[in-house]
Image 1 (cartoon, rainbow, N blue to C red):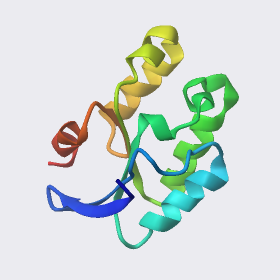
Image 2: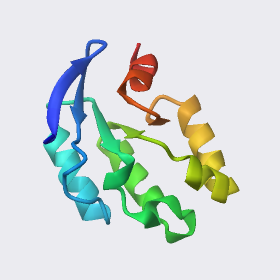
Image 3: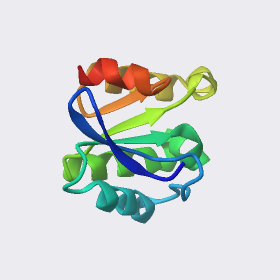
Length: 119
């Protein structure tokens, strides 16, 4: 599946395909933001598209990427199972919990769970 803009609960969402380019740095995130800009309010990125460093908060990659999405006012949904990362890292588990309480970034199991945040 390629990246495609679709409407979910009345909100335009750029749903990124599993087979797309890996998001390994800030420029990769900006490329995705550029694809969504003025076309979508939310970007749904599969867990598998994110570099492993994203899940190691000490690397700073997650913070940089989340900040870029916030700066461009594009909401981010990380879609897929992150339980291995939340089990391994209390800090990452706390990040997921805090993000899911807000309205800018979510970690969801699937697109149907994203719909719950949108509706």
